[in-house]
Image (cartoon, rainbow, N blue to C red; front, top):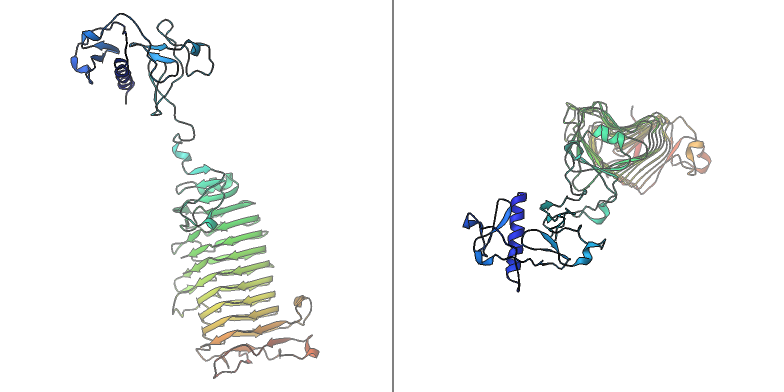
Length: 482
């Protein structure tokens, strides 16, 4: 709408009100050249920027100020006028004094809220509030907020965000320049290089029911190396079969208090999550699928180099079904202390499902471990202080579990639990598929003492309780064949 057309509409509307109110005296106006300028047939038209008369009977010589909305300001046929003189001195009045004698221009007054108003001399446009003004294209993807309510998500998925990012943003710049909880809208974000998160930072899906996809071609995708108090929540990392050659997530040297919640990793070439010389790492939920190159499966979660207090709960790891080409263990602990795997699932591991090598204070409980080339649980090479209970282990090429090469004695590694290895209430069936073990249940080193007496508590031993379940045609435990 042009200013001229808006002014015409305003004038015609006011003139109609004026003519329907009696008695009315109108200022003399020129005769309209084109009768069609009187679109509503009230005898008044608008030409060349001024009002005109089509029917001369409406013309007069006197002026009366008509105030149709009662705000003290009116219209006399040609210009704004003062219907109530108090508005001239009242600071709260809606405009500056504006009449035939001074013709001052006041603020733009929009009485009907349509965005168009009158400033005393001409039609005007009410400026849009700054909060609704369209931002520049380069900042469309970043929105600072205080609270975000995902209306179509359950209440427990509501999250507080300090910044919201949209697909197309330079994620590297946005992460480095923002702090707190950074929320990602649904969509795909390209990560050709490693993205290093900051201290005290959270990277989270705005709507966890529709998580963002981090499409990676990087050697390492997300890194918390040297960082503390970092959370990654409800994102998908997709290597597209070529990316994340080393790690999809690297919790590297010096990382502390790191939380990975509901992170899904798929189609990466290297290890899913690598934890090296890190402390207090929590992995909750999430999944790791189709990792490795060609037919060789890589480790889903790898923990090493004196990492401390690593917990994995509710993770799902899946290799390639019926792929017997081999590969690495699904979940591994090497030379670390305080390592737990609970309520998780492993299917089609390239080797063992849970492999513990020279680690201490270990918990492996309530897991579903199915189908792999070696053992469901593999605790060897000096590992101490393990509790293995409540697991369901089926379909492995070798025995369900193996405990071997324990060259330690019950000492500092035992902690408050006097047992070195306690194995209880596990269900084991359909294992030793290639007949490389003497039994389908638990293979143990010949140097270990099975079900030790109280006098043997300071010797190498493993306690296997009677509530473990095994195939009827197999012994519960037997000697490990190297």
